[in-house]
Image (cartoon, rainbow, N blue to C red):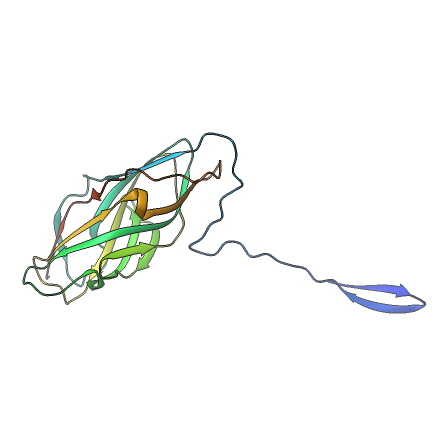
Length: 196
């Protein structure tokens, strides 16, 4: 915006500069100022509704693990989630988590993407998208594409220790940081790779 001001008989052009603050980028969300109210609660469990099964090699969006997120008190935002990728190779080769690509966290019902896609590291997959879980039970599933280096009968098991692997969780209403439960390893049902 530009304004003209008259000073000492002369017109002076004054530029008015607007400062625009850009909101939080993907993967980080600043919590609101903490309040004195009771903090929320969040816990992670294995989801038995997604059974152990055969999954295709070189096929997109194959289920590799599933969990239930239980939230009470207020919605909870989690800014980083780590899942371990445990592989048992059927022929003794060295396939590891880097053979699992395009990993996404999705709603088990409906398939909408919550986080990702990201590729696996040798031992884990790390999501840095901030995800807000509502009060109640949210069923989530990890889906991925197994690359062609994997063999039929390779076994994949996804695990997480929420208290240490789910980081920077806070209540949406109170702004208070929350420890994610439990402190024990949560193990999803194993999946068996199969070539089409």
